[in-house]
Amino acid sequence: MELRVLRYFLEVARQGNITRAAEALHVTQPTLSRQLQDLEKELGAPLFIRSKRRIELTEAGLFLKARAEEMTTLEEKTLDQFAHLEEFVAGDVYIGGGETEAMKLVMEALTPLGRAYPQVHFHFYSGNEEQTIDGLQRGTLDFGLLCLETPPEGVVYRKIPYDDTWGIYLRKDHPLARKDAITAADIAGESVILSRQLLNNHIFNHWLGIEAEKLNVRATYNLIYNAAFLAEQRMGLLFSFGGLLALDGDHHSQLTFRPLQPALHSHNYLIWKENQIFSRAAGVVHARLEEVFGPHN
Image 1 (tube, rainbow, N blue to C red):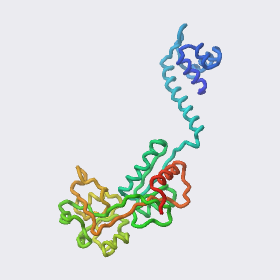
Image 2 (image 1 turned 135 degrees about the vertical axis):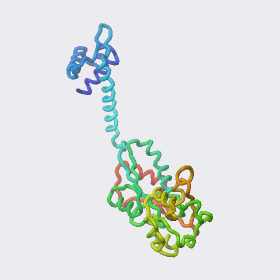
Image 3 (image 1 turned 180 degrees about the vertical axis):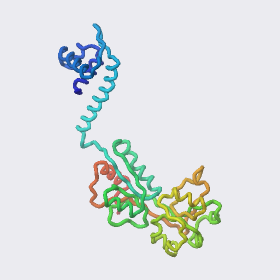
Image 4 (image 1 turned 135 degrees about the horizontal axis):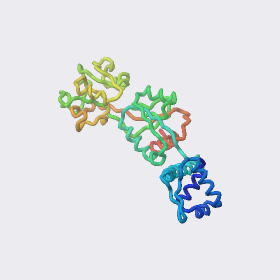
């Protein structure tokens, strides 16, 4: 079944008359009639109800009309895309990083791309600094978002204008919940729940005044949503960034957040490999991120 013959069929269906359809298609009437007869023979079903004044479609003809319109539309779209191949962008973009409110700014920056390039698909992976950089080096990630106190080394980075504030999620009925902020002395003897990367964070160790491993670490976590259930069950004080848990409504309503004192902050950096060769889709994302967040000084 040729697309050319399907276009003939559609024109006859539109015109309801073989003579007018032949004129519109610039073919002879006998040629058009023969093409339609061959199509009916190929499909094994009559497509037209023929009368002296008008040709109407049979049930099989109506079915073929719907399919033929889909096929010819797809052909036109494909030809148009090939004609504008240099302008066409499609593909997958992979972004990894930790849990941070800064991701909201990244999403806001990328939102216009979702409308402009509907064939670009985004994939997000949660991971710590080591996992994110490893993904970039192995090529399984195009971009990463890291929460750090100082700029990362060995990668290209752009600073996101948002700093995360460290603090503790704890039950509302815990004695420390009566304080406005929590000091290192307050947590002496308390059980704690830490992210795995926080165990080796020298800035956090400096705030504590001791190595984090010397704390009574009851649990470590990768995703804070799961760790919050441990805090609700009185397993320990949960260290993380403020704003990551919704503390109202039915979810984690037993918890509250208190910042650390003195305050402890982490900066956020978008990163990618040096001399990275981007796919067309990732290249569009890269250009947008540069436009919004600009090069570092």
